[in-house]
Length: 318
Image (cartoon, rainbow, N blue to C red; front, top):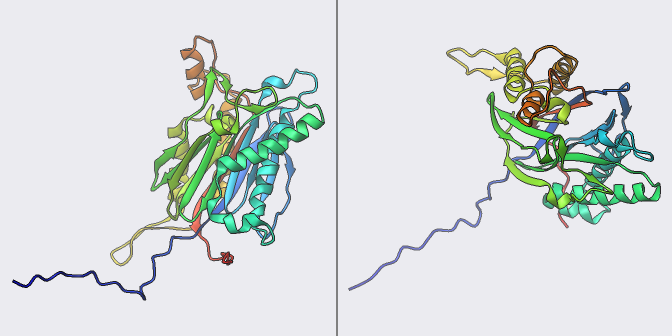
C-alpha cells in the first residue's frame, strides 16, 4: 500500500498583510474655573503638536498621541502648592517623550512601535517630580495618556480623567474612574502614595472614522455619557451625505475642533447651573450622603480626535 501526504504550498513571494497606518486629526477646547484660558502652544518636531494650560488642567495633542492632566484643586490653599504646574509639567514632559520617537538621532526612534503610555507616564512623572523637588513645590495631578500605533490605541489612565471611543454612533470603549473615596481620585504628586504603575492600562483596536474623546473630570462630572453621545451623533449627522440606489450613505470630513467646542460649551453651561438639574457628580454625591445640587464648577478640558489614514510614515529600518 502506498501512502501519500499532502504538503502545504508556501508562496515565498506573497507579501504579509500590512497593518493600517492611522493618525489623529485633533481639536481641543477648555474653560478655566477661576482664570482666563492660558495657552502655551509650541510646535514639536515634524508633527503638529500642542501643549496648553486651562486653569489647573493641562493637555497635549499631536498626530500620534493625546493627553490630559487635572491638577488637584485641594492643594490650592496650601503654602508652596501649585497643582497647575504639576499638570502642565507632566503634559510637557509626556509630549517631549513622544518627540523622542520622531528624532532619528535618538535610540527611541527605532522603538517607535513599542511606545507604552504607562512608561511615558512614568518618565514624565519622574522628570516633573525632579522639578517640583528642586523648587520645593507641592501639588498633585491626575492624568490620561493615549498613544496611537497602527490600529492600536494604547491608554494609561490614573484618577478621574476619562477617555471614550465612539464608532458608528455607539460607544466601543469607555474608561472608568480610579477613586480612593468620593471626590478623592488617584493622583501623582510628592506626597501621594499613588504611582504611575497604578494607572489603568488598555489597548483598543481602532478603525478609520472612530471618534476619540478625552477630557478632565470637568467634562465627565457635568455630562452623562448619553448626553455626550447625543452631541456626537448630532455632529456626525450634520456631516452625513445621504445615499441613493447608486451609492451608500457617506460621512464627510468630521471637524474635531467644532465637536470639542460643542462638548466643552455644553459642560460649561451645566457647570454654571445651580437649578434642579441631574448631573453625574450630583448623583455620586447624593449616593455618598452629601447634599449637592446642579452642575460642578471646575476646569474643563476636552480633546476630540478622529482616526484617519496616515500617508506620511518615516522609514525606521536600521
